[in-house]
Amino acid sequence: MQATYLRSMLLALAVSLGVALQSGADQCPAQTGRSGPEGDTRLQTQSSRAGAAAPSDYLVGPEDLLEVKIYGQDDLNREVRVNGEGEITLPLVGVVKVAGLSPKSIEQRLRAAYGDNYLKSPQITLTVKEYRHQRVSVTGAVEKPGYYDLIGPRRLLEVLAMAGGLAGKAGDAKAADVVHVIRGQGTSPTLVIDLRRLQEQGDSSLNIPIQNGDVVHVPFAGNAYVLGGVRNPGCVAVRDNLTLSQALALAGGADPVLATNQINIMRLDQNGNPLTITAHLDKVLSRREADVPLKDNDVVVVNIGPVKKSLYVFKHLMPGTSVSGTARLAP
Image 1: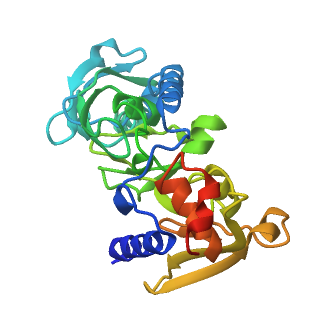
Image 2: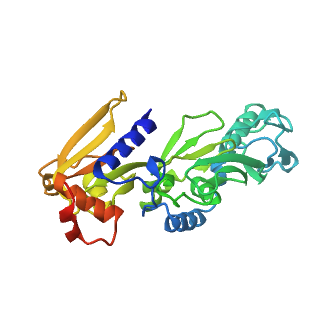
Image 3: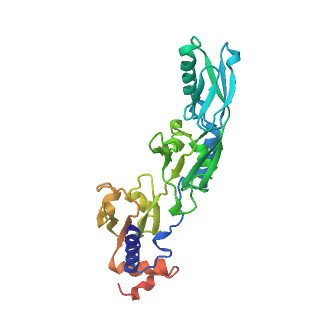
């Protein structure tokens, strides 16, 4: 319903302004932003600096090869492969469940198993000698969505880099500022990672380990449409808490010849009903009126006076025609 309403609104506005939409509401020109090639380069650089996840972050699973060493008990040291049930078998203690545990957690489990009946305060170290292949899915606004096989521990930035980085070739393919990580193990709810904090502020705590079966989803950024008395009517990506004044700036600013002072922001409310918010250009720019935050699929119309519509037609449909000729046109 929203897409149909949006397209109908844009077409109606285009007709009322005397212009045609070149490609409709479904396509937008490329916008400048963090998600283009420059953003991808930074993503690649950050992922290489981050390196592989520390082994303590890794969750052991079937087919991993583990080395168990017990200080002073060389006869009990073993290299064991985790079976399909997620278990290993060790001298004295027998079968131990290890799948889904970190190496540190397995060490604690083994210390308890040996310490209860066999050894006094055993010192045990566990090392992952061989990592199984892990499969994760990367979806959404990345250059190469799909399934990826990982060998060994990997973190979020590395996985995004493997998928070619964030999409940025077209306005409607702009990546949003968050990443959703849906845990395949079902051990935790979906994690929402703030890419701005991770990439621009360097919050490494958000560069989380990616686990087997995870789905890494980068949402697409939505678009708002700026029409009427602006220099470059079209769409802008709604991201970074985009406000009305910022959207106008991205559209080249108000056209001093065409624009009137009134701006209408049209959107659907939470019940799907049309809603119009009226703003005033001079008051917004002078901060005497609230700078309205925009939402996905908002349509911003900088009103054009009746006499100025003919100027709009000449400017946008007949480029190169002198404005002086508009005197012969009806308002």
